[in-house]
Length: 165
Image (cartoon, rainbow, N blue to C red; front, side, top):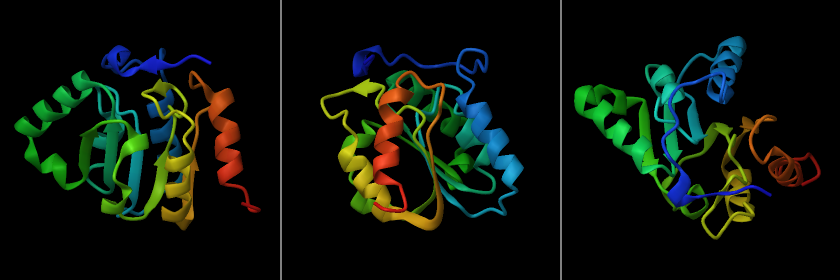
C-alpha cells in the first residue's frame, strides 16, 4: 500500500493529465443536471480548488485539504474575493479526525483520495461510519478508480455502502 504522509502533501496544481479526478467530478456533476443548493464534501482540493470554485455559485461545498500550500492558496483566493466563501469553504486537516458533529448532512461526497494519506488513522472506519449516518438517502458517495490506492479504498466503500450494510 502506498501512503503519502502529511509532510509530503505538496500542493497539486491543475493538471488534468496528471490527476483528472476533479475534472471528471465536474463532468459528472454537469451530466446529472443538479439544480443547486446541494451540500458537497470534497476530499482533496488541489491548489487549483477547481471543484469548490466551479460549484461555489450554486452549491455548498466543503473542501478538505491536508496540504498547507493548498490552504494558503485558498486563503489568498478568499482575500481577493471573499464572496467565494458563500458557496465554498476549505478546511485544513485530516478528514479522519474532523469533528463531524459540526457538519450537516451531505448530498454528494467525493472520497477520491481515500486510503492515500497516512496520518495514523488510515483505515477510514470512523469517517465512513459518520458518512453512512450523514449522507442523505438519495445522496452520492464517490470513489475514483484511478486514485493511488483505489484497490484499498474501494472495498471499504463497498463494505460501508451496500444495501445490506
